[in-house]
Image (cartoon, rainbow, N blue to C red; front, side, top):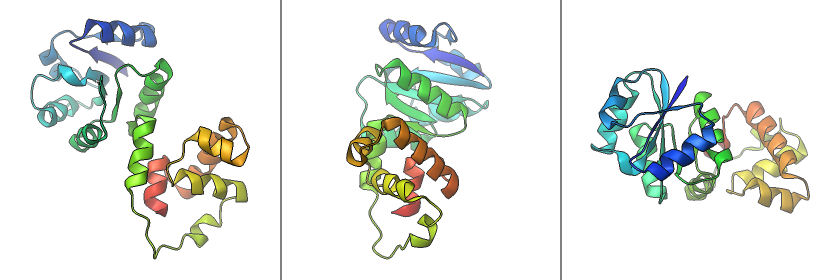
Length: 195
């Protein structure tokens, strides 16, 4: 899958190309994006020339995936972009490993959201007083249950690691194992299942 970049900001373009180490191509004209097929298009939020919803629909028409990066990301904008069909949304200047993580996640067919926003969305999911998850959680190990309980409250891997006195890598391993056992793809899906 080709990676296509589009930005009206040369500094962003240079930064993204540096992160991707020339594994991508830059398309200068926004309208040329509508002719691209079977690619991951990374686009600067400010570079959209038309209405966002219509543009995302047209960009996805030829089996493209869309990652919208924004210099001033906001949770409400994130919700709109995902609702319109974007496959991911994040900070245009986030660290390179986040950009690479977003690309990998999207290529695997999942939605990627800047980690701070994932936690914020999880916080916004109301707890169901009538939901009993004991039977569902019984397939997890005790440590996986501890990790899952903190994940669905929106805690970061680092916070969970500090709380449980384990490493973030161990938290990630328990989280990944729990996702597989519970048939969910990420912590947002986990929160939707269990809250």
